[in-house]
Image (cartoon, rainbow, N blue to C red; front, top):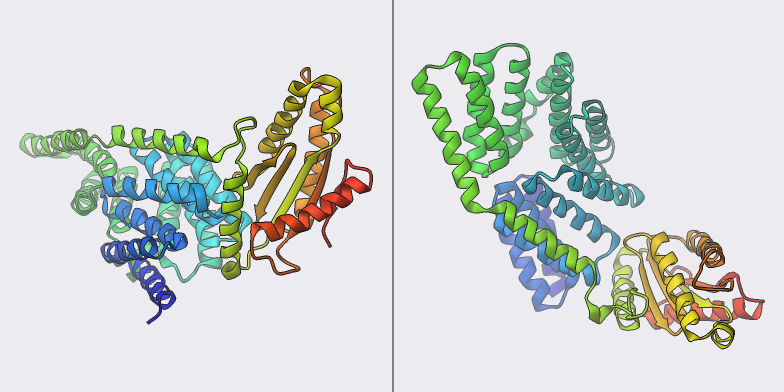
Length: 470
């Protein structure tokens, strides 16, 4: 059996196991895929495998291994991640914010996931993102907005990802949570009735346990204290299997509050001791400290290592630009994703240097890099090719859309330079574009050559303009 066939079988097996809620088996197969990816230098396989390992370890509550795979996935993204890989990286980093209860940061990550998912029509992640956004908004006591997000999650789950039953289940869970917070018992009960009839829920112990919590909250809202305590106790038994200490803590707090009204002194003392033991266990694991340290490392990676950046401008250097684009082009043979190369050249830089000095010329170069960095997407690749020539490589965008972006950048650079104290002259840019759609492109050099020919035309036609290679 050939290596590619082995990979395809692993991909399909892992996806099926995930859909069936067999997360421990997902981990086993995904770790096999990590090893295969490393053995054959297949970064795409390694990215997918690390992501599936991280999601699965999150589900079973193994935080240490969750963090390990989040970091490994992020490292691969730094050098070889596509737009969708970055979407998954933001989704994984959301889990870190849950451990530290940093809901502001978590919301930002989920909004980034949602933005890319909508842009790429990845509707499974749209539903996932809306569900997680609903959870965060409920934590921030924005209950009306949380309900709307949960309803959006349900809409996308039903209309675009109906085969992933877990997405529908999670959307209904967040509708119940939001409805209880809004004291809309009828709405909550409607989703509870729906989930009561879903056999698929049995495959997912975490969701099943959360369902028990929400039932407890509903009966607490309805003033049925004994029934609420009963469901909280059932949830405790299930969540202990998942090692979800944050939710276990919240449930125990609720059980104590309810037990004070209806339990004997001895029964209350048992529940209080369980709560204290849980807090000690959580403190001993020191997960919050570990999560904060991981956040710092990920931020450091995001700042880019010095070997990959241009010392003057802070954008990527030519070596990293070429290597990463070559990987994107290779990957595009399978994904058929469009890739656009935009080459920028500062007009009359020699005249600026001769008239105002090389330091002013350097300021013009830095100004372009700064303006461009502020205007492009997170996943775009901007590098300094040499001298005053820059290259921007973009995935998942048409050449017409890229031309509009290039035209905007030309205008922004001219406007910004006109108001600059460091540059006593207006800076204009000539631009050439090419893509991999209309002709065969095998490497960065092929794509750059076409864009460079278009740039030559822009220069010959009078400069300060954008030309696409046709």
